[in-house]
Length: 135
Image (cartoon, rainbow, N blue to C red; front, side, top):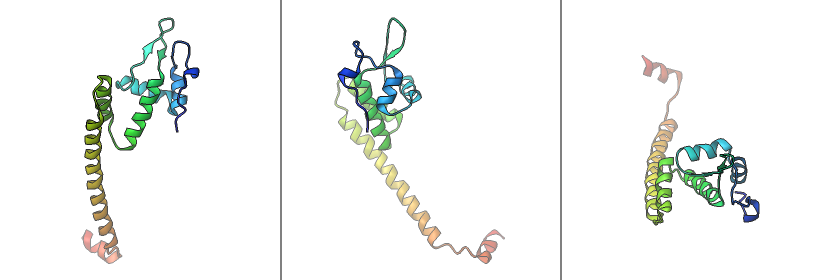
């Protein structure tokens, strides 16, 4: 799915520029900028030109972000998990709780959709029944 950065792909400084990171992560540069703006990625800056400098770890973080989003986690949820990682704490308990919370939401939505389907299945949508309901 992702074109992981190999050490040979990195510049001698170990740096990936924004477009390179986006290409390897299969996202747009705007996505990488957004992740940086909200604090999910914290690239350094190259002193000679001020360009953002991303690492292979940033590429792995994007992979995690995309997987977490696919599970329904919000950017806030993902940020909370990554902050634990950044502070060398075990994020697994927090991640499990967040996923279970999202699962409860999915199950509630599924019940609502099933109830709606039942209403549709039992709908008497004849002209007479619609006219009677509206008058």
